Image (cartoon, rainbow, N blue to C red; front, side, top):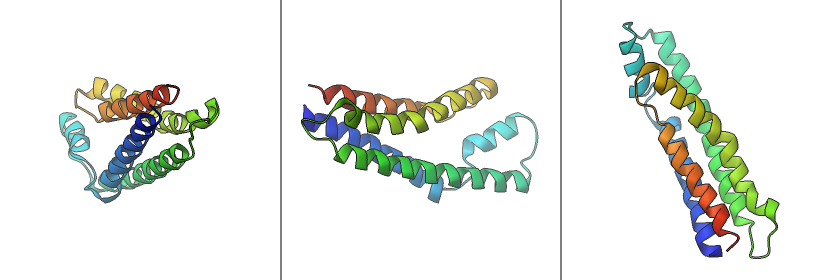
Length: 136
C-alpha cells in the first residue's frame, strides 16, 4: 500500500499544481467573480479587475509552492518513515486547502454563485487517503 499512498500524494500535488497554473496563467478575474459582481447589479470597474488579477496570481503562486512542497515531502517518505514524515504532505494541504475550502464555500453561500471549493475538498480527501494508506 506504500505505492498507493505515494501515488495519492503525487496526484494531490499534481492537482494543486494544475490549479496553480489556472490562476497563474489563466484569465482573471474568473467567470465566477464576474457573475458575483453582475448578480450584485453593478458593473465591474477596471481597478477591481486589476485587484482580482493580483490576488489570483498570488493565490497561484501559493498553490504552486504548496503543490511542489506536497510532492517533495511525499518523495521523502519511505516504508519505515515515522508519523510526522508521513503527515508532512497532509499538513501542507491543510494549510492551503482549509482556508480555500471554508472561505470560498462561505462566499458561494452568500452570493449564490458556484465557487471552486469542491476542488479543494477533493484534493484534501486524496491527501487524507494517501496518509491512511501510508500505514497499511
